[in-house]
Amino acid sequence: MASKDEVIAMAKEAIMEFDGEMAEEAAQEGLKAGVNPVEIIEAYTSAMGDVGVQFEAGTLFLPHVLAASEAMNAGIKILKPEMEKNKSQVESKGKVVIGTIEGDIHSIGKDIVVSMLGIAGYDVIDLGRDVPVKTFVESVKEHKPAVVGTSALMTTTMVTQIQVEEQLKEAGLRDSVKTMVGGAPCTQDWADKIGADIYGESATDAVAKVKASTGA
Ligand code: HCB
Figure: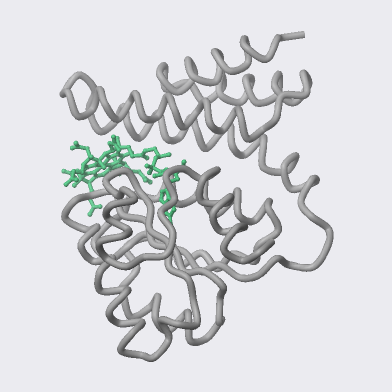
């Protein structure tokens, strides 16, 4: 049976090699060896970050990035049912509305946050990607979530997170919901600057902070 270190190394290699079958194997071996699925997802995510760095450096190109994200999805598909088995059977911890902000089609990170919040027992309303600001506001009005989260992967789209804050205020809804921002260019400073309640540095961090803010 593979050791935990071997599973983590295999998960990272699978993403770096754009190899979906290897990502599935890492997931299966990890489950057999009793490795926490969250740690395997974190290994995929860390390798995806390295792919991103190489993309930025011009040593990898868009097809590589897409192939890496497909490999990651293949692995997560194996892990998700296992994680859902451990999902809290008690009543929902509350609702979270989340989506990738208008103009931005990056969804990999947001999807991981959606999965991990669901597994942590939250009712997640996933608005998808390239979501207009008014849809976030309407969704808060309709679902009355504890938290509304936006994901932005580009410096050109993160600025739209300000509009979520503003339009929630204009609709008289800002005090009824906590706001969360995340995605690679976002920081705690950014969250503080725009008045967001939570900065989710990673999916694990986002879940921990959502739990803390909802008292769950
Ligand atoms: Co994309 N892209 N891309 N891209 N892309 C980035 C983001 C750049 C930084 C790369 C670069 O050029 N340096 C760059 C943005 C530059 C900028 O800031 N202005 C960029 C660009 C420019 C573009 C296009 C415009 C390229 C083009 O067409 N010329 C285009 C975007 C078009 C558009 O959106 N309108 C584009 C397209 C693509 C794809 C389709 C090839 C693919 C996305 C596939 C998909 O998501 N379905 C892609 C990818 C994958 C990337 C990189 C390589 C990786 C992003 C990623 O998935 N990371 C990225 C480079 C990079 O980030 N270093 C590059 C892995 C995930 C797991 O991390 O940070 O998203 P994450 O999420 C974490 C964390 O932030 C947190 O939890 C997650 C899990 O731990 N989190 C939240 C995320 N969202 C949260 C929300 C919350 O509320 C709370 C926590």
